[in-house]
Length: 396
Image 1 (spheres, helix red, strand yellow):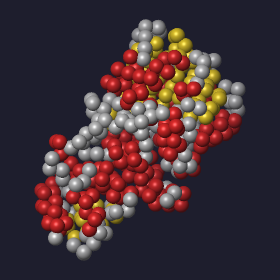
Image 2 (image 1 turned 60 degrees about the vertical axis):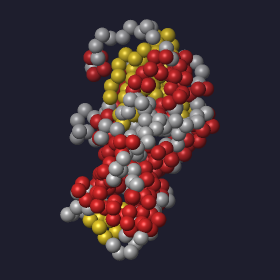
Image 3 (image 1 turned 90 degrees about the horizontal axis):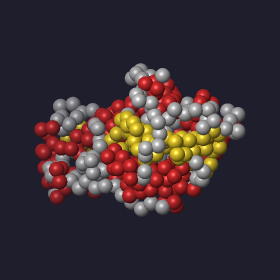
Image 4 (image 1 turned 180 degrees about the horizontal axis):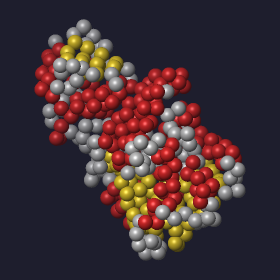
């Protein structure tokens, strides 16, 4: 009776919002919140109702991946319905707890977090990334660009911004499977050190360097960027500073500064929070990602990133927000993930498949809703570099 009374109240409060959702209970009861339903939630037992009666994106995603509820419908509709539930069902949503996602960081914790996320298997990522396995936001010159085009354009956009020249030494922090390092050596003539904490990425990147015949120009190391020695003319960091932690951003940028030659330049490409206080989104999502996908990941607002960068002795020369580009990138990834579901479910257990399925589609929604962004920051040592007066050189 307790649960039924609360469920009836919950449904009555949502009917006016016309959410295209059908809820089916374990006792045969079925409720439609609109005239037509594009999504169906099956609640197999009474205890699973707690996820619905106080929904946030975190709680709904947890219920889905843990198998507490079954969900049917097109993935885009599922994400939309979940967002509308989280928004409208919280009668006190203005006071929902919003926190900065901060956690402990040290070398062991950071290494374990990277390995947890990236060492699922190379073949797993190969199923839904582009051919070069670039796992970061693409750069679309047109919405009709292929994912492969967008990723090559992104790498060239970064290297062009940096004005990379033949024989310059480039450090790629968080080098992934080596695509940027290989491109910088092959097309631009750079000498590159790429570092990663993922053994799977390291092994495949080394294979790719050898296949390209670039062992004399590209070195891949299984190494923490804090242990790198020497000086570099250029530094790239793509999709890595999200793992640093809000309280360690200044230390991160100071290390980048220390590794730069006096007239060097660095480009940081990373996801940022849209909240000025670097807090989680009100309807949720961040706690789910931190628990299931990116342990210890933390997103700063661009203002915090710039403050930390400046305090570390760097000067930002150029800042570009690629938020729409990441929404497009994630749309490609989510679609490819769906198309490869049969193969993926043979590689990983059902829970892992559900985690990544909802994560990719949910992230696309988050970028489209302006909850998160992605910024490229071009920086030099404060007062040290003579740089072109305009941006024209980036596109020539």
